[in-house]
Length: 104
Image (cartoon, rainbow, N blue to C red; front, side, top):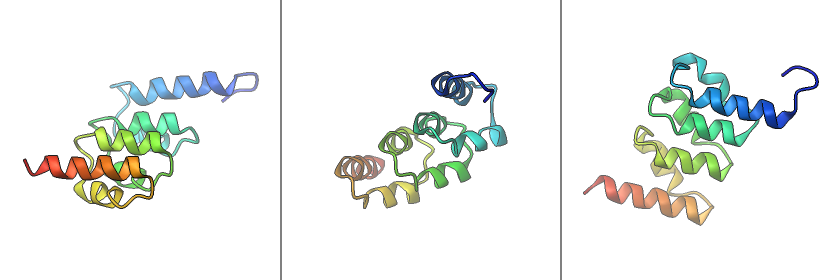
């Protein structure tokens, strides 16, 4: 980020970059560890998110990131099972529901 650029503008640009389908693979990795949870959630929502990033994002503390992971059909079952034990009831309930739906 350059001097004089607002953090909000930088974050919105990074969200756009995280959602850009031309940004793929290893280019997504720095965005997966971005300081903004909204950017990390954008990465977590991508169907082409690298598996390592999905696993790493499963340890995130921000609800918005975890919700994005739970909506992503490529999130590994191991991450979903871990989130089923999350201390936030909303996250735990959503993970349990996803696990139940996977057996239908």
